[in-house]
Amino acid sequence: MDDLPLPAGIKARFIDGINGLRMHLLEAGDPQAPCLLLLHGFPELAYSWRKVMLPLAEAGYHVVAPDQRGYGRTTGWSAEYDGDLAPFRPFNIVRDAMGLVAALGHDGVEAVIGHDFGSPMAAWCALLRPDLFRRVVLMSAPFAGPPALQEGATPRPAAPDIHAALAALPRPRKHYQWHYSTRGANAELQHAPLGLHAFLRAYYHAKSADWPDNRPFPLAAWTAEELAKLPGYYVMDLAKGMAAQVAPDMPSPEAIAANRWLPESELAVYAAEYARTGFQGGFQWYRCGTSRRFEAEHQLMAGRRIAQPSLFIAGASDWGIRQMPGALERMQREACADMRGCHLIEGAGHWVQQEQPERTAAHLLNFLRPS
Image (cartoon, rainbow, N blue to C red; front, side, top):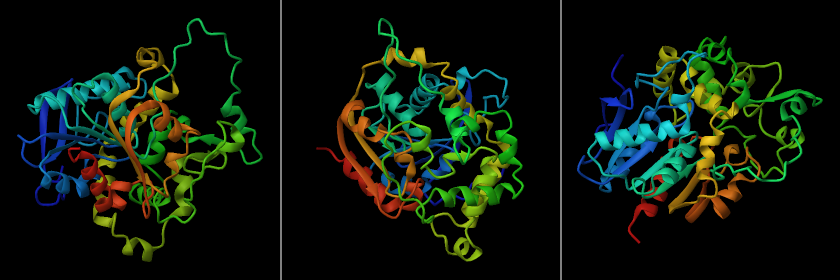
């Protein structure tokens, strides 16, 4: 593996023995300084934090961003579709984070900061171990709280089959998370007909502020008719895989050459890593949710709110804030007891810390400033 093209001041290294993993991480700042733990999402890597790590380190923090279980250069996990999903469940991802913090010699972190799928993982860190994770920043994916207990409750009518309802629409559709849970999804992306690098270019473009159709608005309910208002990268055409879904959204060669937030040289880092590892490690996280296998474990935290100071940051052009109807509002009203702000940054879509790193870092530093 080639060395990563990192900004001066960010270093990469490995730590063995982290909950069964050999964990690859990026870090910046004084290792003796208070720690910030940055958790990436899909399809990303620790590398996605490269533009905000130095401003945070210069403010006096030890900034740590691991390749999470299933991703990048971290090893010790299985990508077998028929393998055990339990290591990828949220409670074990929290255990990974705890192990890394301990191995680094910290007694906790000033803040755990999660983006995309890293956002609910940061939320679970805060819920499960508030003594270790003293603040929490959720980015791009609202956390609506743990599931409620059902014992003793009046049985509710069975919910309509959302997947059958989506498939029965005049334009038949399917939800991307359940598509990502299928056996063939990994090969479809890793060996995309347009090429892996080109697929990632189209995917990152379609979910960014550069795609003009990203103008999110609230959805009324979790119904097929409402979900069908989401872009195709969230609610897909039934007969398409994700590579085919986003292929028509490929930016022009001129737009690619003009891209400053993800130039070709930086996109090549993602393409090289996913060409080597595939996507199944990330897809295992989705399967933990779509299978609902671990919901009873999550109900251990039923009724629990995030008590620590919390913050939400997302791009104003990010449909991720609206893909779960009502989640953004429930996060602010119920899930977080001490939310200090909800910032939607203009000029950013889903990849907010890459599209608008200066403004993202400014919000983070303002939140971290002692009150």
